[in-house]
Length: 484
Ligand SMILES: *Cc1c(COP(=O)(O)O)cnc(C)c1O
Image (cartoon, rainbow, N blue to C red; front, side):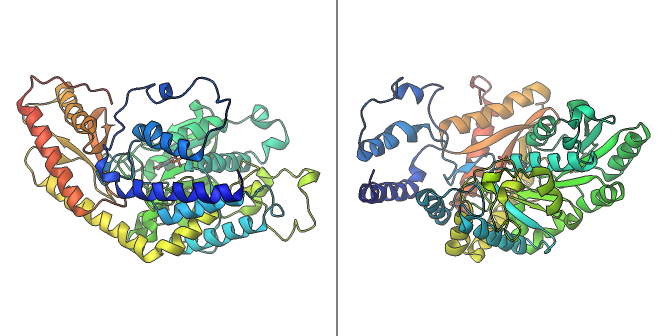
């Protein structure tokens, strides 16, 4: 494809995307297709002859779009808000179009230095001190894995330079809670700690926040038993119920024992753009690493996860590889982001944050977050004030966990009822929410915060929910497919 052909196909694609975003509300929220249906629309062998950009655009519309669950739809209340900003999409397109290679400062000085700049901006915008230095990772999962590798090497005094984990006498221990994201468990396993050395600290029953006193006791017991406490992963806004572990109390324990503290704020980090929310991660300055995803509620295009550490020297010592072909004369003066994580080749992700902040502007981003918080409070108030309905956990930000509990429905019958009304709505395509479990019983998470979602949409959702749940409760004859 020549630059001139790119210009023409690109204009057509941008026009198409603009129309697509404009008309999204007409589409069903959940993809209305069966497994394998999209795959079957494509030949089994790679095409032998080239086709045109116009043909591919046609196929994009007819073969791909039906297989998209519309998470930008204003009636999408599933999982978490993410990935919305068209301003940021422009930056991502620029990143792809420039075709840069990010393997060292020298291979693209602008990619390295703009990343330093935007990470500094976001640090300030979330109220973090100048002690922190950041980089952009693909996801919070990668950030968490990186933090546990750093913790492992600190606790073991660089076991990687000796026999690695296989040469360690003392088992190293990681602490988190049941409420932590699945990526935390995955990171602990991949970093070699082993499931036996992963402690699930007790939580307060109402908030599901880690109990610092229980952590202190477990750490003391482990030390007594000859183990080596290595890392705590605290959730600042868990995915399930937005639980905030008490970071200050936890940090007092980790600081005392030299344990690495990683704060996973993947979802709730966006809230820290609002000064009034920052009390929720009080004490964060005493952590060792923090990650949060602008590609979630803030709306930057995926993938964009910020990872901040305080001890850069330690990180570089753990992560650095320095083959001769990557060395250059300016190595002492510049940042080499390949030593801040796992990949060597890195995308020019800073561009999408720069575009996002530059075009949307922090004021409009903050106004949108505040709108969502107000909508969530309104919704929670409606649910709490309605007989037979309950809000199950404290509403810290924009996610509300609810259940319809008509008199006489309990246990598995209640589970069937919950799954029946939520899957009925989800399958209809009018709205979408995530069913989830809390203490072994089904509930429904309503996550508010899609860019296009206004109060009217939240009001419409509440009406739909009440109608469906009540009509199902009074007509037990109806069989619902509860596959979700
Ligand atoms: C979404 C989420 C993650 C995982 O994020 P990825 O960027 O998809 O890896 C981790 N922790 C929390 C609290 C989350 O909400």
